[in-house]
Image (tube, rainbow, N blue to C red; front, side, top):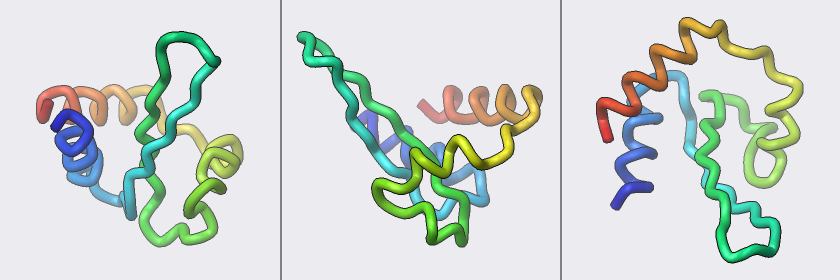
Length: 76
């Protein structure tokens, strides 16, 4: 399915230990699904802790983020 393809595309970027799937909703008729890559070897960020670490980790440069998005989109 779509989630499996997205997971494989994110893992193929390299440096990703696992792709976590989170679902946050606002109680409405729709929901939000987030695929968040955990950096390889960063076991402190497993499970529910990954979204907390997301604020503490350095941001990727815009060019790197755009290149990753292009690769994931191409794999979809």
